[in-house]
Amino acid sequence: MLRLQFAIIPLSILFFFTSSCLVAGQVIKSGCCRTDIKYLSSVDIQAYKGSWFMQTRYPFWDDVNYRCHKTDYIPARSNVHMVSDTRIKKEDESEIVRTGRLTFLQDGQFTIEYDNADALPFKYIILNIVYNEYAIIYTCEDLPPSLHAEYVWIQTRVPNPSQEVKNAYMAALNKQGFSTKDLVPICQKNCPNYGKSVEQHQSKRQRKSF
Image (cartoon, rainbow, N blue to C red; front, side, top):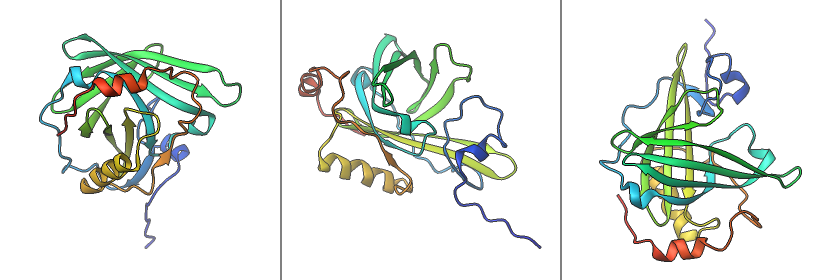
């Protein structure tokens, strides 16, 4: 009897298991999504707003083509943020911007729906957050016949955080039982779209964490 073992399957294989136009999960493993994820009891939306910088994440198909990934959240209603996602294309140094809406659901869960995108809103979970330092985001999708696709990304309040902050979010990820070996760093050096407001934003923010 032939025994199949699944460890990590490249992203291209994912499209044989799902018809989604855009799939968040980029690391595919055997079995179903975990059910022991610890949710946040609440999220301070006002503290969450502002600029976040993509520091590292599980493999994403077009990461190699971009650098300087920044996301801005601007509260529009009690549980909704306007989202502006900006990256720099390496080929010609052009600025690529996507806009959309982030809607908080409950217990640290939210969806993001980008304008002019074919994909349906996908649900994400905030695993851990220190509002003036970092946020760890997670999602998972069960795939037939017995696989799951999971995605983790880490945002930080400054483009290039200290080693102390890096150690903190790595420890938080390990505590939840997630692998850190699959994380791919995002280049955040010499970013022309960041301006001079990062340090000002950081100095005004009061430290809060869960």
